[in-house]
Amino acid sequence: MSRPIRKAVFPVAGLGTRFLPATKAVPKEMLTVVDRPVIQHVVDEAREAGIEHFIFVTGRNKGVIEDHFDKQFELEATLERRGKLDALRLLKEDLPSAGQASFTRQQEPLGLGHAVWCARELVGNEPFALLLPDMLHQSEDRSCLAEMIDVYNAAGGNVVATYEVPDDQTHQYGIVGAGEKIGKGFKMTSMVEKPKQGTAESNYAISGRYILQPEIFTLLAKQEAGAGGEIQLTDAMLSLAKEQAFSGFAFEGRVFDTGSKIGFLTANVAYALERDDLAGDFRKELEALLRG
Ligand code: UTP
Image (tube, rainbow, N blue to C red; front, side):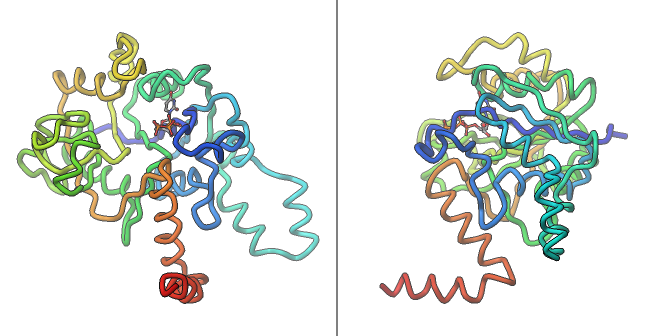
């Protein structure tokens, strides 16, 4: 029986240089897709998958993320006084319960691997989910993390979510090799960060969702800075894969990299078109724009 996944880590300490000047004072995780900050969409996904504890690795200029997940007394009182009960209900639904969210700091953005390592004391000795908040996973049915937990419950070990990318784009992603099928997942046979064009073993690109065993922290602690002078998560996962099983999960919904401008803009359109209260009018506006 695999140990349950109760905690999720959200590394939000990056500088967001691809999105300047928007991210000079506003964290990229607080940019909105329709009317919810990107980080809220990702926390929703984790909550839907049954996560009980939300761990944010923040950095300088990221205090507003902490505020977003805190109670705003004046705002709530004003909404109540003005009878704006729907807005008030929305705020309350989004709020983690007392003690359900923890925040730790990565004092310097030394890479994703280092950010994850900063969460080691809060995670402790149990498997956990890791969600990169700039990657949005839009699904028709159950969330990506919920489906990954099914794979984890069947296979144990570690799980990496992937999605299929066109053959001529594999060199831009982390690519995993796919072996035999296990339930909704597959045995992961290799993991290569940005393989040279034409050399990728598959077109399953890593999508920014992981279930990891706590031994990853020991390996991250030993890690030297890799590509770009940053401590890379992939290097530690490759070391862990020598000792433990890794499964892949092929997510079938849409994946958006909201840290890139095109990904962010497309995500806004895709999420707005899924909203009953907006889709009709928005579609008309889009069609008019495209007609020119
Ligand atoms: P990215 O590489 O996409 O984020 O990291 P970035 O460094 O902020 O973006 P650019 O490339 O400069 O535009 C993926 C996730 O990991 C976090 C980021 O906040 C992002 O959510 N991260 C990255 C950290 O928490 N710390 C780091 O040192 C690096």
